[in-house]
Length: 140
Image (cartoon, rainbow, N blue to C red; front, side, top):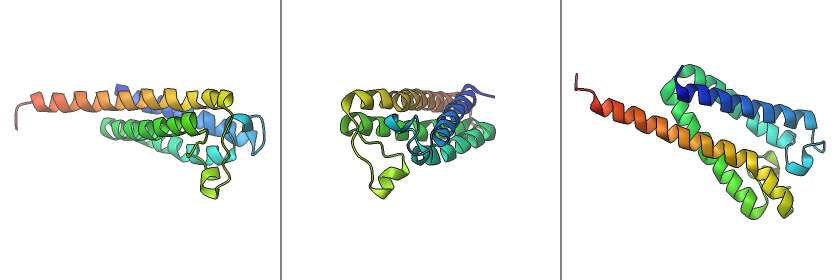
């Protein structure tokens, strides 16, 4: 298992834990102030499943997963920090999202921002290293 596959597995586990906490919280439970609810969990769970599958399939698909999930999470963290609304949720599709207060929004953004930046940087570094290695090989 390569480093990007291990990181994909770790991020998939983190997303699965966040989804489980969201499902356990319910719609207005303990995670509601930070928007960790069933609507968010229903979006995070398929991403976690895709991460588990990507980690088993190989390095290239793991790199693709890391870059894709990294971009999604960083964009969602940016929207959450600037507008107070997260878009990786079914609440946004229903149009029932209301902006968060500034102190809570910055705390709620941290998991998205940290996971997103780590995934994006690691995915790009791994893909670039693999491309450089392929370029150095003699043609067959």
